[in-house]
Image 1: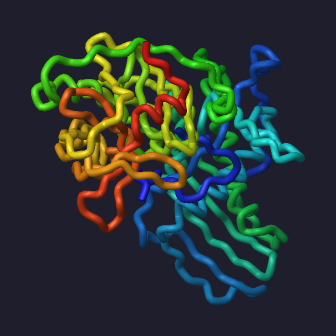
Image 2: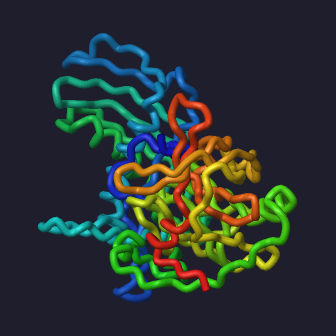
Length: 417
């Protein structure tokens, strides 16, 4: 099974990359963007409720006379339901405000859709929810109230740049023929309108940064990328354990994490499934410092990705070897098993074999790895990288698999000078 920590995202409507968001109120138009060619693009992320499972959230009844009124309590589907309602409201309110949404372009042919990178992702923490509804067929009446702490996240900065708490409500004293989602989403529309009317939200502009061309779109025609090969460290991997651990990082986005390692100044390798489809990630160094990384190259089939960060002067990149490793030699793995709390975990084993599956080569070892090690380096006894962690056999002991470093380099068109 592929090593990964599943992102805690249940159901997102509309577009979602990563690696974040009473009808009588007047609509306030946003200031026009600085130029027509560079509109500010938003996408909706998700709603996460701070309401405890089992807490009473409202009442519901049915029929023309609203019989059988009973309590409704929060379930584990609360986030999923409210994400769908808020996403529906977010999309319609963006259109009403004349704002651009980051969404794939639709093609009538089989050409892959081009995903436009969002300048900002909007998500919310549902702090309060109450409703008292009655349904009769497709007719509905009653009231819904929500209070949401909105967070506006800038992917290129990998941080929340704006927060605001708003409340929204909708009341229908007479029957209306609407679906449940349309009815509840009106409360989110009112709450979102308050967010989008805030002067600080209206002042948001595109953030300067690298081109947001999707990496997947460019993978097919990669030009060779020349990087300076790091020198090998004198002594064995055990002697150099402290220095080697400094070059290994934790790669994070949303609520998932994996490992990675520097192969040159400002460049690090990881697994593609660690970064997913996001364009920007957080990179936590061994020192505890967090920097922003841009996914500049990836290969889905070979499951590798190249991340670019600022140059970190006090980190010595790892030396890599394209030579064929020998079965039976000692190997060492470094990574962040089960998350960043165990970053820098150093384990030892032997190279058990070289395998092939679906036309792809793998290195097999009994070295101990766990979910979160994905993307971390496999080194030989001479402090040299020979592979990166990718697979762990389910319900088996001592069966770990690694992508040969030569395959990773070839897939990403990396040339070590």
